[in-house]
Image 1 (cartoon, rainbow, N blue to C red):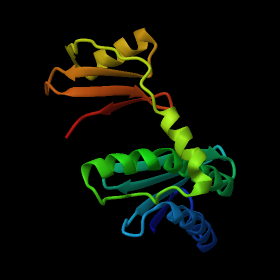
Image 2 (cartoon, rainbow, N blue to C red):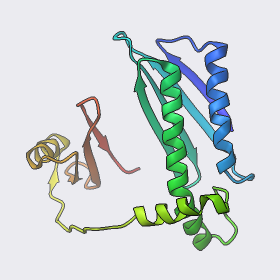
Image 3 (cartoon, rainbow, N blue to C red):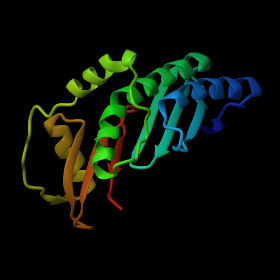
Length: 184
């Protein structure tokens, strides 16, 4: 796995880089040999004595992403690696099954071993659609969509952008600000 480690308001020391690379190397066991994964690791340090790590692993047809905040950067690295490992275990059977349906021999993750049979059963049970909603998308701008989202008390809102006539999503970020998702 190729790692791109960069720091914001923090110097990425050789010890810190080595620690990140050591932890990322543990994730390689989940990937099939033919899959070339690049991990983008962003380390941040805030004035209020808080550190943050963001890891993004873009792959064909899948993006793994996790972030974690902690006072200790090394603890944040451990926590974010645990999150990524859980994501991979949860998605590997689903992703491999879908890819096998699309392409007979394509795989991203290694097939589960006997010890991981419980993970496979657990991940298949976790993914269930329990409710479906249908509604008309009203053309509006992003500000009106944010107001609608807040009035409904939701964390996201799907709408048709009045300017582009395309489906967009506004969402509330963890920092309390808002984000907009637009299709390409």
